[in-house]
Length: 367
Image 1 (cartoon, rainbow, N blue to C red):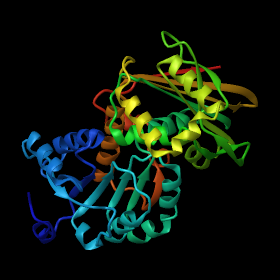
Image 2 (cartoon, helix red, strand yellow):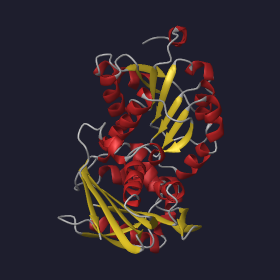
Image 3 (cartoon, one colour):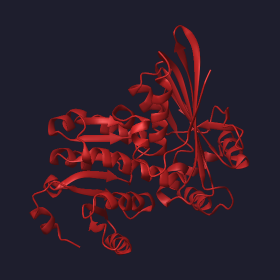
Image 4 (tube, rainbow, N blue to C red):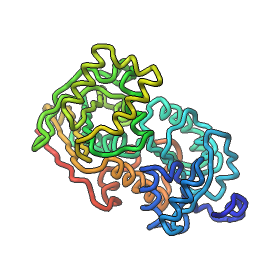
């Protein structure tokens, strides 16, 4: 492992730091980028031993580094870093601001809407430093945002877009991802409804969604993914919602009943919350799959139009990593306009598809 002093001595701004690079998604991001940019990729985080173990597994293709972003990071440390990919959640924007001051580009896979709003406020700071931040990178947010953009391009005016995400219980997610999901089960959040911010409750307002084929019709419920507010703002759509269902119908239904009965309020007690996280990590059955459906409605040539976009695939975490790596490759090779943007403001679905090892199969129906 190179020391911090050695890293500072270089004069090229060419390094890629993946924060949380030894985690489930981070490892996949690192591995993909190291194949394209050999010697440039670093897996960073507070647990150096995990970073070193992962580095050895890659034969040294990915380099290890200790970095604690919860503490102040001197922008000088980032002087040789061209791009940071953030794979862990943050509570404030101090590290993003350090990236801006260093002129370092930044990608974030977080789905935490409140945090992403904080980053959005750094737009002028990023512009002044000439650096770019891309948010909403992954499956949801990410591919969902791009599908809404794709659907809206078929219409002169898009009035409404409903996003639905189905997650398979057969995929073993990292603990942080499961904790985030459990924490969103008993929360209220803002959505854009008829052009106005409206407060809604997670796991409420169920809707029947047709995924077609073997998946069929599923009941899905509101969930606090950040894509719904981002897409409403960036694509100027008056009403956008995101709902969630699991591949297990009975577990999806049980969560909805628990919400209505007020049982999910018990998640505020740490031991109950931790027990639920553990239960979700151990739940048997299900498939390692995901499905994303976008139902958009609007006008074309004065007539009503509906556009349905459907993607069904395997391993949501792998797709999140592939999308993050795809955006990283684009930014590393080609400078983007400085500032803070969501993925759909800078890229089309086709541009991301071109970077994926296996393009997603998108089914489109227009009526």
